Amino acid sequence: MQVLKTIVTNGATILPIDTIAYDGGLWLVPHWIATPDGYLTPDRIIRIDVLSLKKLDPPQPWEYHLLDRMPDGVLDGPIPASDAKRFVVIDRPRDIVRDLSIH
View 1: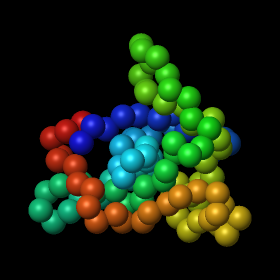
View 2: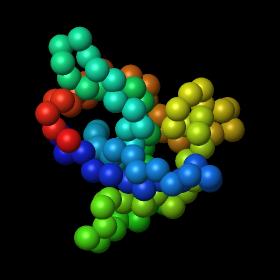
View 3: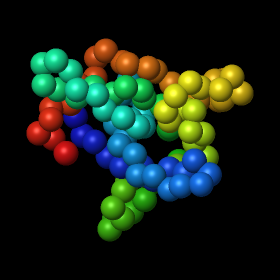
């Protein structure tokens, strides 16, 4: 699995966040968690190719810039009802794993 980087803002901070291709789209992975068998899996994924997304050209240290503000609750924590319809979020997807040796 290729892990890219997307630059994201929550309105106060600029964050580089891992990004993966999954199920025909691009998804942010704010946090990876370890599995008992030594792999990593996303705690949550957020679809971004349906938002305002800009592909960046090299030599940028990241591949994409998300132009929409990403609320903290969507990145980490309970998603506010006001944001639930705007963002596509999957918590603990079971079929995505990443080898610890891949950076």
